Amino acid sequence: MALHWYETGAEAELRRRAGSEGSLARTRVQDGSDVIGELSLAGMSVRDGHAAILTFLEELLEIRVAFGELMARALPFDRDHSAWGSAVILLAHRRDQETWAAAAALRTHPEPSHRQFGAEVLRLTHLLDDDEADAFAGPALDIFTAWSTGEPDHLVLAEVLGALGEHADARANAALLPYAGHPDGNVRRAVASGLGTWFEPPAFSDDVREALLVLMTDADPAVRQDACYTVGNSRDRARSLADAMFALLEDADRRVRVNAVEGLVFHDDERCVEAARRLGPPQRQPGSPTVECHLDALWLYEQRRDGRT
Image 1: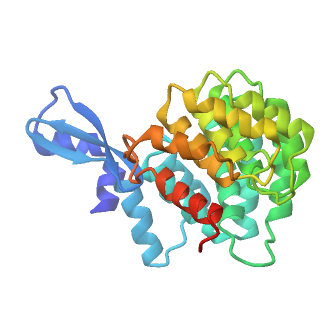
Image 2: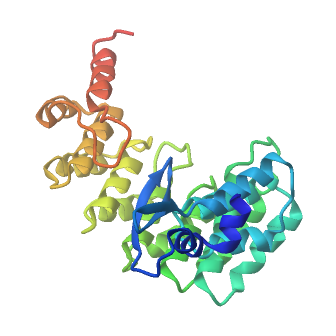
């Protein structure tokens, strides 16, 4: 059934069943952590997740589908669609040289969507590798470092920089820093999330610290939020970083203010107490399954401060 719907196409099969050539209504609906499309016509509705269902069933039956076929199922859809996610994750879990080579070859493809698909397969191949040998860490760092210097598409570049931020290596920071002032917010957000986050030194380098201080004042609230989170969860106790988080307590975006409070808590800065109380009770942000936890963080700070466990 899934194969039939996939090969026929959701729209064509819906029209056949509805017996109508009228205007289709299209909406996007949440499907777990992914998004799928819902098509409605003449009182009938269908969702377009059949490619993902087919991929799931083939995996259960241990049918190995070619890289090109899985990619062909993903590319007609957005990156957040279940067809894209299921194909990428399945390929990443293969962790073999054949799949790695096929994904790496897409780096030079003229279409950005193909390059993004390849970059995501490579990134997740390393990220999901639970083998202690971490055989894909070195090759991933090498290819993404080189890739970052010449990628013209903003969405693909953000994916590449996001992958670099998952490596505990000074080369990753060096590759991220030139893009801290990039005109695209997604690219700056990748930098804000990736700088220094996988290191365990007592402090950032001067260049990284300066870049994060600038990103914490970015015009895009998502960039400010990620930069503040990076700083708050770091071991760098520079006063300039704590002061920058304190300044964000007046930010117009509540998510930035929450990150600033939690960052001050992690840095054992006493200003977190009044800041947390000013935020008030925890809220659930629109579209998020989790509730803010700044009061939990404050409780931990007060326990440490008072010498209790």
